[in-house]
Image (tube, rainbow, N blue to C red; front, side):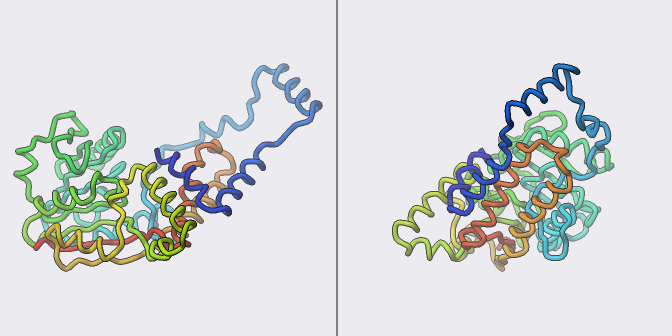
Length: 336
């Protein structure tokens, strides 16, 4: 679904579309009959071209499996950028000794390992929609000696009845969920995917203790939306494509609102002291630059098609940022 959205996003502007066409054509190297014969002769003589396949034998299991857009203000390193963004979300929680934390959308567990590194006395429950990622995260948490402090589930963040233990598959019962009261709830690069974010915010509000803290990184509509709405047929076409792209990426259109409406929704859900900070300039350009550099540094080790979704996403987000259609924000507040 994400790839379909990215491909559709490539049509949003002539520049993006024709850059993609040019890139594709550059990869279609046509051979002459003589070149094809030579290539066929080589394969027929050996039956197999060895090439650089042995590179696989030199790869090691990665120490990290981060996947967020990163905060790139003072770094060009992916892991550092991901940790920096995680810290931007964790710090506003103001976690105290022994705090109970709910993390929605924990990926492969890096952000939870990092949170426990920063606040080792906390206890944490996490849920993510990806069963395989939940299993990997559980294994990593266990290997880190944190199984008694961190409990992980797979399921829909807005539907606790769907949660299943990443370890045993045991359901997280309705009664069990409602018996839990949390001091803090966070979501890192995840809640704009929820169906819907508003349902999730209401769930957060009912699950937090009084004065408990909420923090997330999120996507909202930017000021360029107003310009597009005033730009006649072209503007309406842009808005239509934007809505289609976001839908194809699995993010409900209902979740995308302008800042004033976003703040109102947080307040309607029972949060006070709401802060919304636009950090787009330190997110989208940095991510796009990293994807380009990282692909070049690997020198063809990874198949070209593996890069499509990341290159496409980087191009799309850079276009959205350049035209101020989407903003990347940090949001936090306190339960009234």
